[in-house]
Amino acid sequence: MDFIILLHHLRLQYPAQSDFLTEVHKSKTSSQLREHAKAIAASLRRNNYAFLEKLTDLNEGGSLSLIIHQTHPNEPIFGYTIRALISQIRERAREEAWKGLKSAYRELTVDAASGDWLKRSLLIDPNEFGYERDQEIHAWLEKRLTQGEIALKEGTKSRFLIRKPAA
Image (tube, rainbow, N blue to C red):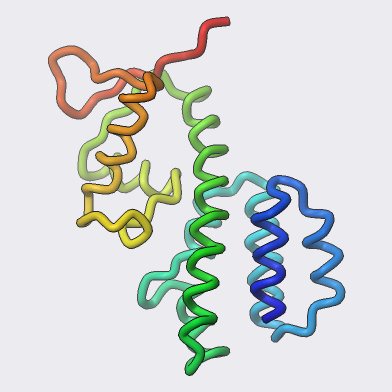
């Protein structure tokens, strides 16, 4: 239960972590879960979204999935709660990662190789979005197209121009 409280504090005050750090010191959760929560917090603090993606992987065989199954094998509600909190943390981190990508790049190409890179960079998990593999990135990009943040490059189907906000 303490692990849920730790994730809740990360989600609630993101990007601030003062309440999380206070709770870590009071936590009686297993050292494995406590260390995992601290690693998630550190990756958020450092904007290390690639590492955060690995730490919050809830797919079969993913690091967090394995820890949950080892520590709470017969408690499905624990897994559902963790999944919901991780999804919310990833959504907030995704927005920060997107800000970084928008400032660093003028154009994105979404093919097989770069699509996987973009999904990892933006913490996009097909299970989280409920899409078939490779459809989730296109759904996410479609949303950005309708919001006017990107535009399809003329004459292409997989290249997107990133629109910079007017100064």
